[in-house]
Image 1: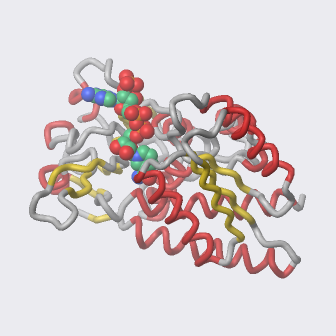
Image 2 (image 1 turned 90 degrees about the horizontal axis):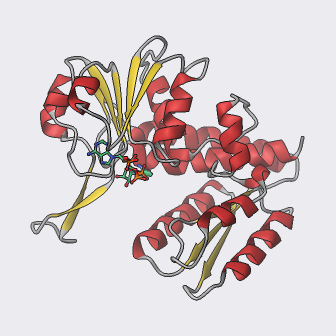
Length: 292
Ligand code: NDP
């Protein structure tokens, strides 16, 4: 069994970003990322902090805008419009989830698609479906695909089962796996909460991508011998023995599934570090594309 280290592959992606940033700086441009946080959700705050730190470590220009939970829809639209017009900003990300009174879809639609480094704008969703390489692909599934490629997992002709159909992970993941080319050309099945006899379907899979949001949901009975498992899940479960009182576990019951696998990602240290690395990569790409 091979443990696919997201931390290691992420380092590689970040080193590529560094080379891209150096080349852009030589042309007099520094890629800029703006991360907007509305409200004070602690998990979102932590994500925003780590994105900001990673930008600074890499030498990207980083703007962190922390707005109060009382920010109105119009005020947020105005912030987005300002960032759209700012030539120093090449990527814009509005941290999800915003407070309930904000129409998130409308905010995403207001972001200039050329700066939509999260890949959630309808233009970028369409570009993914169209296999247009100028589009931005959501960072988590893009990171999963990169993990498969770097681990030397052949996706061509493989049966990949994606569990989950969200716009953030499951759906774009399925599109990437079925697209033509490296990391694609798979035969893809998408499963979700209404799927009948999930285990019978996942047991047919050469590759399983688990993006469910339920701790340790995928068990040994779901997995055939020799399968590759990518665990997207990040779930907090109580752990009274730890300092924080909780620990992070994936959507896969790692201890019982790993022995059956040809390769598997751990949690933490698997898909998580890839997501932020791909955000940096998308920001560098946005900057490169802005120069024509
Ligand atoms: P969502 O809640 O948006 O989607 C979960 C999907 O799982 C849905 O499509 C749902 O089906 C499906 N599902 C739920 N229960 C079952 C079930 N019993 N059987 C089969 N399918 C089921 O979550 P996300 O896609 O946003 O995230 C998924 C996981 O990935 C979470 O743990 C999240 O924390 C993690 N995540 C990790 C990231 C990272 O950087 N590593 C980034 C983003 C997410 P239905 O559509 O029918 O409701």
